Image 1 (tube, rainbow, N blue to C red):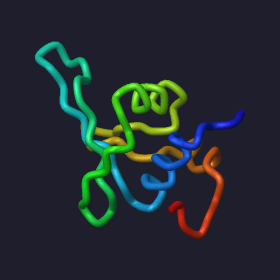
Image 2: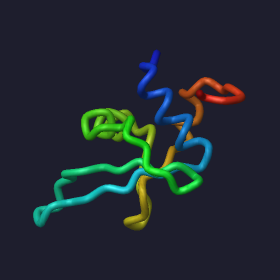
Image 3: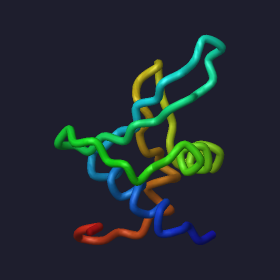
Image 4: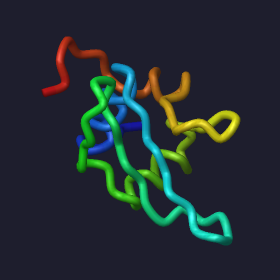
Amino acid sequence: MDISKAEQRVLHLLAQGGRIVVEKDDRGHIINSVTVTREGWRWSGCGIELFKKLKRRRYIASRNSAPYRITELGLRRVRSQLDNR
């Protein structure tokens, strides 16, 4: 299964130690997602639709209400490169 370039970029960022922090409304639905690099910088390349797509494919997951991180399946799907830039 191929993944898009946008998905590859997000997964590379997460594989290098990044995380996705979500904001929820009163009903518990996700309304906003913020991608943070391992250095602490915000990255705007992951919108809510891409976030939902990665979550639906189980490439990212959250454990114990922590920020979303890459899963073992996500690590296997992303192609290894020295630098994702």
